[in-house]
Image 1 (cartoon, rainbow, N blue to C red):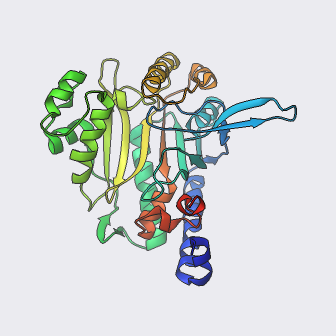
Image 2: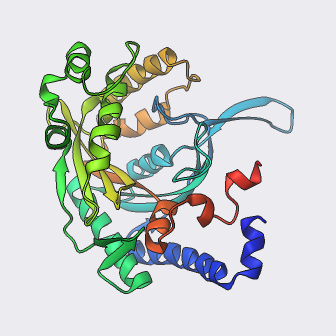
Image 3: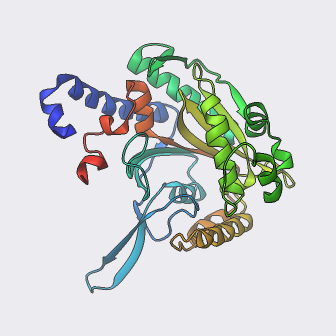
Length: 343
């Protein structure tokens, strides 16, 4: 029996679906009370995100004269939202459907999911940290009526401010590795060869992920949310560099109960630097045999309008709902999971 059928005979599942919608309503209330404008941006675009480790879903379609066009379903509404910032809006948010190929059907992944993104002009990642702390705390108060969240038998204190640790300190604490000494690929391989198996064809980002997923993520504290900040530049192509010579960028991620919830930046607003980063990502995508994605020149043009300092974040709505409703697998959360649609 499929999930939508189970709802018709199980009152608890129906109540849970109502709570999912209430969470979305509360998200909107939270941001509108703080002066944010809710916006809608395209789901089908000409230029998808360049991230080498994401695979957008390609779409071919025709107009009324049968002229063929090629586009992509968005992996994130980020590019369009930044264009609206450049157009003059100060504080905006969107709850958008996004799509990613090569995703697992289950666990914390579904090829179609919902992304909450918000952006602030004249701001940075420190303000976005406060936003996400206050948002999750507010939602849990409304849904679970407590300062605490219980997720998979783990009691988690959501009271702001949350603990924070830099990526550099996390590597040193949990993996006994000094990232400052691993900037060269050869040095990285030399320092982890007795720790983690890797292929000689792996690049710097591959090694970073291997260490992070195997040596750091499993050891992150579970009794409190944790914010991990200041990622190395190769891991933060859309984020502002901490300073002109820094190896690190102003990016952070949020983990709650071991679940990766959100990814945020002080946004890169330098058009020339962003263009050069996109070119490097195109080269990397080609090396990884990923589909070619053209650079979004509209975004580069938007950055050239002298976008002021700003901060932004992408937060997975389904993962947030899983946390608040204590659900382990996204296939149990969604009325129409891909695993059942495409079985």
